[in-house]
Length: 99
Image (cartoon, rainbow, N blue to C red; front, side):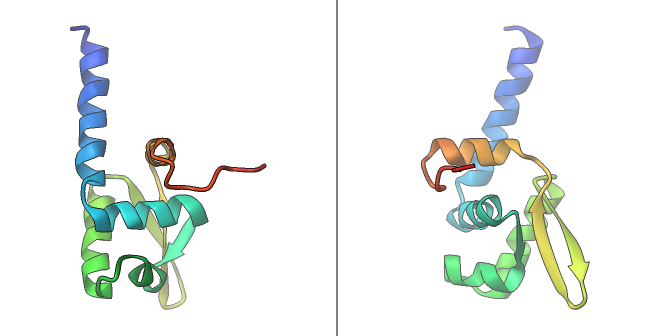
């Protein structure tokens, strides 16, 4: 198998591992939809505690999927890897962009 193809397949397998967790999928859907999201806004989507959401966000940050910026006391998370939205969109989990 061509090295580039194998590399891409490995990358997409990693994406699917990340998306296999319902909480992470919920987090990423919200960030894709809203571009930047406060941690406190993510607890309502998943039903998980803010502590658990923060743990999952830290994993996503470690995997270079998201990053954050601080505004006062609040942290706003945003995507650093735009491919993830394309994958999530293919699952029909996001409203279509009507621009």
